[in-house]
Length: 379
Image (cartoon, rainbow, N blue to C red; front, side, top):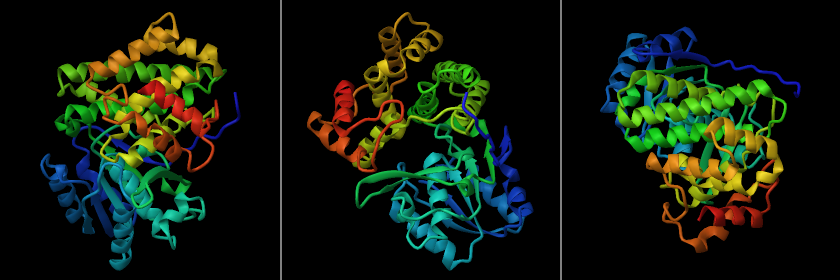
């Protein structure tokens, strides 16, 4: 095993009826003026908004609202949030939503101290400080609620890139699984597949990290089991709760603490959704990841065989991949570029987009041509 340091400073408050404590959490941290960031308004339909506003007012916290965060959040909206924070002398950010809202909150938090936010994504500026971020998670999947990473799309240049810095860990995160019962099924599925994909980005690089590998396998099996249960009964609270917790553990540093992440499949998917922002991240990963696994199978054969046996109870990788795609399809997820309505002639453009930030992959570094070959497999 490699030497490693595991440190996650995010306070996690998990369970039913926990949203109402957010005002107290922010107040006792010493902040009285915040940006309230959220998406398209679903939180006003499920009661979350009213609970949040009451909690903030009860604790004498002044808030400025910034709504309209979109799936695959964009640079222009983040820049608007930065200006709101500066103009109103705000001290912290409360993100209420899924990974897109939280990622934009982190981007705003970092951009508050930068001359140009996108310079951080271009690796031209270092993130040394950020506004404190608090989160209320309404869709489980990205793990952004308990990690220091964010993804943002520069819609002008068609770049979907990421940042990461220790100061971007949320100060506190609240997860009430019950509020996720009203989610459309496809959002629950996309979140679950995203979480599985996060685990797999570390899994195939592993060789002797038995603890991390065994935990990873258990988490993947748990996510599959919970999605199967929720497909039958979306109000199954234990399944919601276990899915939410597994999705957080998938990318809070636990399973990746003793290995190096791969991230090629994610980079390829970013190449897709940068050009097709209407495609959900989890949906894109459902298409890309099986193709990436098939293409890279010789990079670490014993680990791929273990994946087939311990996750899918299969005797071969081909059998496991067939089971994986069958399971995804049974949940209603896409399993090919055709399912995403992406023309085959766009493969070269997607591969080029995915290669614009440099080398892709650690287990098997991929050129633009090789990424195109993976996308051919996914077609």
